[in-house]
Length: 89
Image (cartoon, rainbow, N blue to C red):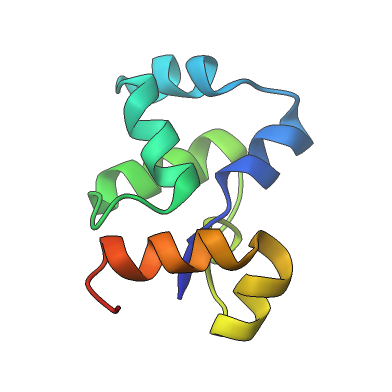
């Protein structure tokens, strides 16, 4: 599973989703979908903008985790919804 670690980055920088959306010139809904794993794709330009804003590497934003790790960190419901949304069910 690919996890987008925006919550972690936002918390570390004490920034809220609406502030990030404004900086990236996108909607709060886009940020919310990315945080909840309910996005199937996003542009590399957006990843580049996130990395510039947070002064980080793409690996700080994106993370590959096993299903077991995802369940441990995010719960069974998150994993079930992720798999259903992405067609892995």
